[in-house]
Length: 320
Ligand code: ADP
Image 1: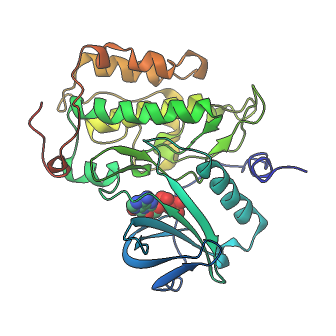
Image 2: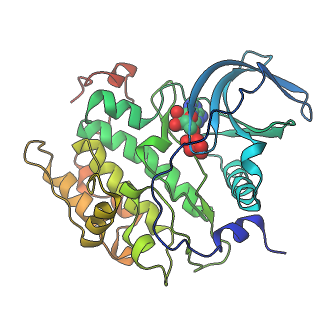
């Protein structure tokens, strides 16, 4: 039998690259105020709403011991097709297999008649995307701090044959101590055979690697996450993604042509420019490894803060 993960990822690639998701559905009914997990005889009181994504809503909950967590709720209505079910099972299978300090911890998964629920580590400080909106851009020491944590998580995923495939600021959450927690494994893929290549066109336009879009015959592998790390680094220090434009087609053209620049009005160090250029190499085989990235002068000669103060959510911290 084909495993659910394989069934999903070996699906024929869509004819054209993905366009941003649009939420045209009407809002589904809210989950109960007290969500019961009968199989583990646990219950969770809903205490707040955290956000929603393509197919899930996420709430803050508290269990009987007072422990606060996030709960991701997927309505069974949205799981009517085999494809939707397979995709959710793949996300759960991959996410629950990962345990790392910089990956959102997956605790339990259960269901009632209406919904499937996943309890997750609570990331109180939102995402790096939310924080970037308030800060406009980050200092290079902060960027080093966030990137080192991201690379640690990514190295762990790759060692466990998992490609995230949707690394972006909106999927990098922050806990109360401002540590990075990689989340949303909705597009993650498991490499079950060495050398296996993935063919599904997926990702988020601004962060998508060129081989995902333009080398569909050959497929893609772990290096797509490295590419996204390059896009993330650029976005942290410059304040917007390198290939950004209004039209998705134009973004893809810019990715194909490796067309981006470092705007004069936002000066950054030569080290960070060089590292970004090395990571955003068109040929995935020529991209630096994660080890090579952390050995780059940007990290070696620059300071890395021991921690980021919570005040950094709104203003530049003074360790510059
Ligand atoms: P989807 O898979 O549907 O895209 P996400 O996993 O991206 O859903 O979650 C949707 C939103 O919920 C996020 O953008 C974020 O605002 C919030 N969220 C998700 N996970 C957590 C978490 N562990 N802690 C706090 N907020 C979260």
